[in-house]
Length: 72
Image (cartoon, rainbow, N blue to C red; front, side):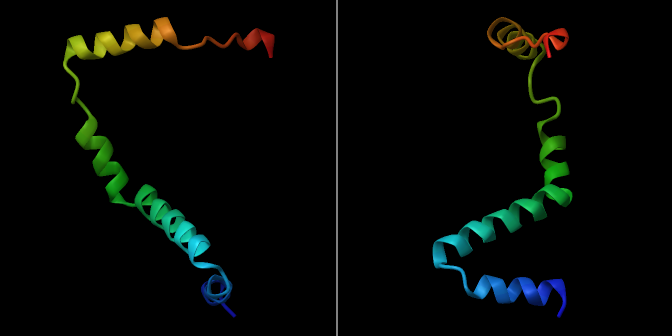
């Protein structure tokens, strides 16, 4: 039995809510591995103006935690 056939058999026994969860996971895997994810990144590239990018950078610098690697 192939991995696809075995997986299909296991899916048959899942309750509907778990089957929907699995379907969502499969969709995420497909999108992340395909050209859709790359296209989304390309579409987002350059979407901020220089001043917006500066504002975001300042917010991150001011409000986000710092990790001290020497304390690990």
